[in-house]
Length: 535
Image (cartoon, rainbow, N blue to C red; front, side, top):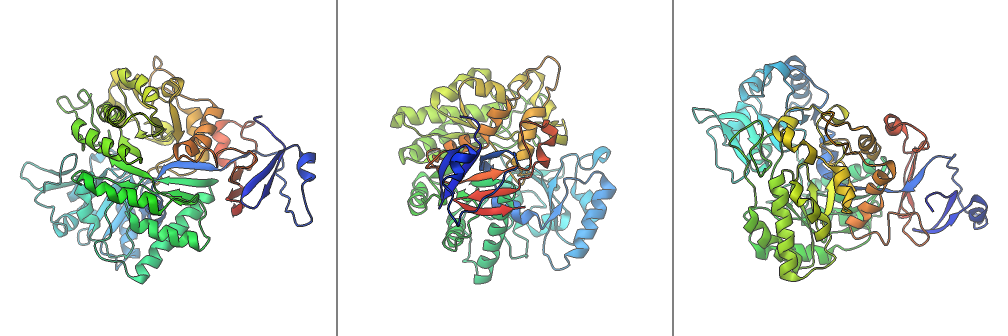
């Protein structure tokens, strides 16, 4: 029954679904009636991949996504510097790789012209590359280069001095540690616990950021979020919010297993899973990075980058190391979600999941691969065969919603274009899938993501159309997201007995063109039977 006229809620559950007269018959004297005005009512959006703390905190930082050109960047940096005289590190966020346009790549020398005295770092929109000025590099001990581990790099020039480009988090975290704001802008991204116990004021500040982030998500119609970073400290903050009754969304937080950690440390993941397991707040998942991103050449490819002959990228976990980790995590009954962008990284993950099945036996594991921006055609059937969930982000393909085509499409190369961001092909195999944003890399609004699923165009006339239907896209943002979190028996559908997670749009999404989707609201969000946003 894809359409109904009315729904009744009682407490935190859906009581009934049916015609207006059927539902009106259930109303009592204290019942609140909400007239949807013929607009679309959906299950609450499930945001299956985001970074809620950095997304919320980033709204306070210098936002560079709309900035283009050297003069405009210089002006923005100076204004931000003047407005934050006491901050130990000036942080810009959302930086396009080609922000300087014809002036070429960002270098420390160019940043020094904009801010010669105070440490400055610009974070790429995808958080996989950053650029720092000379004061920041010297203060962080990176000016003369440093070995920061596989898959990470402090880029240096012919004289061995840092150019300013920092690839992946091990390279840029020493700079971020210079900040003095008191807030941990990347809280949980490393997976490590705070080195020193946060003060009462720091805890209060961090809780305020998390609350703000969840409220912002609720205002977009989101009722559940799958965070892609975190630690026990973050879980403890969220538990406090839950006990206060102020959780605007359901939250799932993973244990972050990074390269270099010994396998026995996964006992911490098991403890997190046991200690946090409510309908509003849970763990039960382990997050791993196997590679980086295409734009910086840190994604791991099976064959050379089309724009960099002789370079495939370096995996953070090789096939053997990842397989060992996957076997151990799977043995513990935990779910795994892995960042894998390049076709080489995707294969490493699929091989690891296959090894886990052979070692531990097949089960309903619902292991995930995040992004899957390029895959090898030989690997396409393996997603469904292994029961892997394809977690994809419709706003990410180059050329979509204003994203630049370069350097992404040149890095992929025309021979691999048919296997890049291939939503249609993946869905057609019967693979379980879900859609999300990866906020703050792109906008968190599901309505913008839904727009992207409908308007994307191929990079060439002879390339396949990888769009999905509107209903497939709506599934990807609702019940398929719930399925990816083992919650499909409780959320993701408007059905009697399900938890009351709903979003009312400001129009009929089936009656407007996709470019009009972002203007549809939402006007009302209900999570667990409580109104969490009302326009």
